[in-house]
Amino acid sequence: HPWLEAELTAILATLPEPPAQTEAERRATWQRWQAGLTVRFTLPDRLPPLRLLLVLDNLSGHKTPSLVLWLVAHGVMPLYTPLSATATPSAAPAPSLVGRSIADLPHSINGDAHAK
Image 1 (cartoon, rainbow, N blue to C red):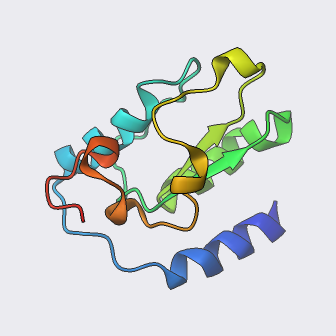
Image 2 (cartoon, one colour):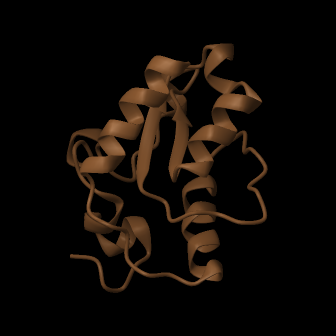
């Protein structure tokens, strides 16, 4: 996935710097986003700040350990499309999240009391 990695690197470079967080706060942010998933991947011991949510389809190539590890190391949480319409979460409509930084998401979504 060299093309995807290059594109994501360019996108990440345009985002504002993430707010300062302790290790525990970073882990809690990642875990909040994993809480509603039916299949979770194991988070590494050390996590970078969560910078971007990336929605991918369920192709096996999007779930390879090498890609998932690269994404996580760069602060990108991979989220996969549901296999059926009944699995679609209704917490926040997707268009309201598109093009927004994690730090800009409402408190109820990212858990940051200082969010805008």
